[in-house]
Image 1 (tube, rainbow, N blue to C red):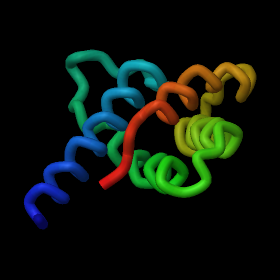
Image 2 (image 1 turned 90 degrees about the vertical axis):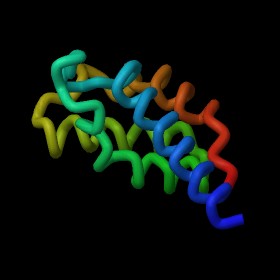
Image 3 (image 1 turned 90 degrees about the horizontal axis):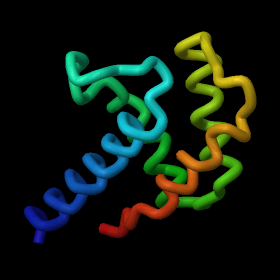
Image 4 (image 1 turned 45 degrees about the vertical axis):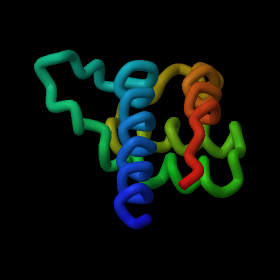
Length: 94
């Protein structure tokens, strides 16, 4: 039972990782960057997906990371709505 739960958790992390890298990608990492470049943001995204599932909260989370961590936010948090929706489409049930 534990192995399947751990396997499922790894799949969830990977699906979040792929959306962050493919659809969000605020610093424009390419194939030459490590695949785990955005891994430190998986946990906060997962907490929203497993908790409130709020689109607005997801947008705010991503925008804060862009502004506070990378120092280069997109012009408007509204631009992050498609990414938030893609993340919210993920099944994060263990």
